[in-house]
Length: 152
Length: 261
Image (tube, rainbow over all chains, first blue to last red; front, side, top):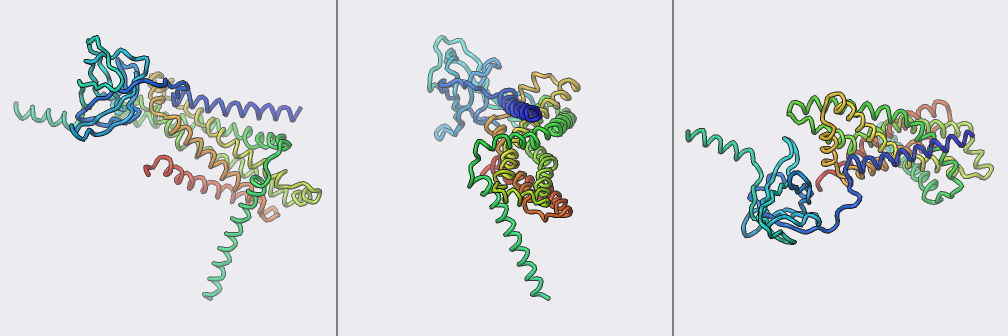
């Protein structure tokens, strides 16, 4: 019987350990076991991306509809070109939608918010979102505010 | 005399090298050269019980308290910046990346490592190891290997349990006591924590620390001077060396995982 209790407690210990790993995976890191495969790519040019990083959220009305795949500098236009992967089931973004870089909270991460337009045509794989608004840079704001003060 | 000092330095260097050699020999002889047969399973279960299950209480209690302290400290700092919602990600990242593997390894060295050293050292002092060899049982396979495997298996599990209990402890303080919205707590955490980058890297740390701590404990026990004084010194050395090794390896692993190069 002594051996039995030892073995049962060891079995429970192993189960608790693996359960802890699963809790960490699902509840803490928010790991999605069935990542939405596929999807399509959209591009957008921003004059200033601020602190946007790859894997940042792309959301519409606060709901995540994709993530940032890559960020590079367009050598001709000299603006940042952001490559976004949009989930395949979100295939209703109209062509006159606009993209803006937003911040979640004060210290939060930056993400791309897409505001839908009214056009009947929808964006497909490889299309550009032309209507964009750059990240808010605090120094620019302060500068504009000071200029206003001076001109008054 | 200068020549005597040089000789002493040389003697110390050689004996250190010999100690490293002997510890490597123990590791190779008990694990690599003899793959564990299924017969070892009952022995392994017993060792997991001693090393893992009996360490559970100290791990859970200290995990809960460290989580609660992190929640409280994080809140009082972050509330100055009006971003107390970020307490969830702060707690989760610091626990997963650093505190869970390191504190678990330090507690593990004190709780399980010292016990392993004392047990094996006493076996050596009472010549149980020698008599095992006399009756044709390999002490590496019978005594050392199950303890080593038990350490490798238990450390990562204990570290995961520590992290989960700590995060729950922090949730208890931050959400239930200080009134942070529970949705903000968990959602910020899930957004900040990356499974591959944070959970798995913490797990790798825990595996490495488990390996280092058990190896040092087993070696110190097997190599101790077989007297009561020798055993006490070996036990002290286990805790000291294992703690230092854990902290040193932690820096190296952190630099490799999170440093940009």
